[in-house]
Image (cartoon, rainbow, N blue to C red):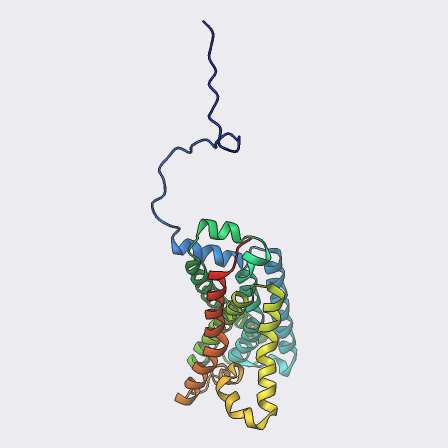
Length: 272
């Protein structure tokens, strides 16, 4: 009796079919919390992201060191908190831009949208991850300010007050959230890392300069300049109804509009 060897059937292209994977099939999509966690990890789990965070840390350390030697270091906890929060608000959104453009700049789009084809959920996960990053930045700014104030008191012998107004705390938190959402919006709108970084850093600044120099546009600038509109929040001053209206209108232009354009582009862009 001779043994008979059975050859697996061939496909129309002549290649052998892939073996069947045993086990239960998934019946639900990827949990949204996992998507948000992955997007949050993208902001720090790349070489560019890590170097950017290191640069931000060095900038903050340099500013705090200078403050310790100016005026005897007696700037108070609120002063150190403002000094640590400002560079975070300017530079941390760039990390959000890197995460927003990862699918197109790092060629990970096929992987991302194959695992989660519902692109709206991916965009929402990026926004949620940016808000979580903003909260982490706020905690880091509070901790660094406390450390700097402690060094000023113990090493420099400064008479440093430990007070921090609730208005300034919530104002910085809101500006951090808006800045990170703005960075993600520019990244999603342009889908190109260098262009998004330049656009995020240059366009609002140019707009502020133009509206400040051209007298006919100063009134418009008060309502559409997000930098000027959010100044009362950073100062911890009382925010009037007019101030909130200006914050809302400028946020619609510089935060909500880029996010909406980014969602439209992501849903319609070809993934290669």
